[in-house]
Image 1 (cartoon, rainbow, N blue to C red):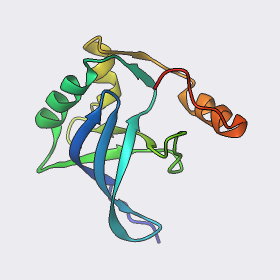
Image 2 (image 1 turned 135 degrees about the vertical axis):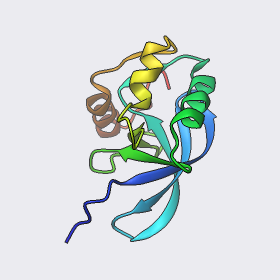
Image 3 (image 1 turned 30 degrees about the horizontal axis):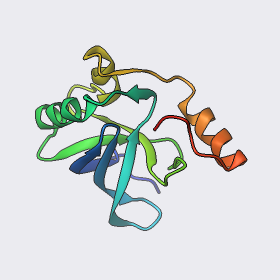
Image 4 (image 1 turned 60 degrees about the vertical axis):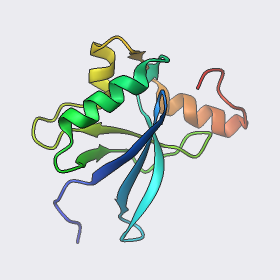
Length: 126
């Protein structure tokens, strides 16, 4: 039986403009794992890392954030495609980055990732 609790993550650090190192409970392993996550649905510019840090500091509830991911899909570099969400307000990191103009919408991120994986090529922009 599945738990009704939201899947939560703790941010360890921001490693790149679009990559966050997180600690999360992996439901398949039933243990905590550290993994890299790229923010799904947006193209981040070079200043996005500072905005991510600001958002995490403001929205983390005792270090925890809700992790939104679909099927634990990973990109060409092995990073989890996902988004972080405030447990209380529901505000998402990707929306914040777009509002702050440090990222632009990338509506077909999953499809682009799947196509790149199928064709065995790396993306033009990371």
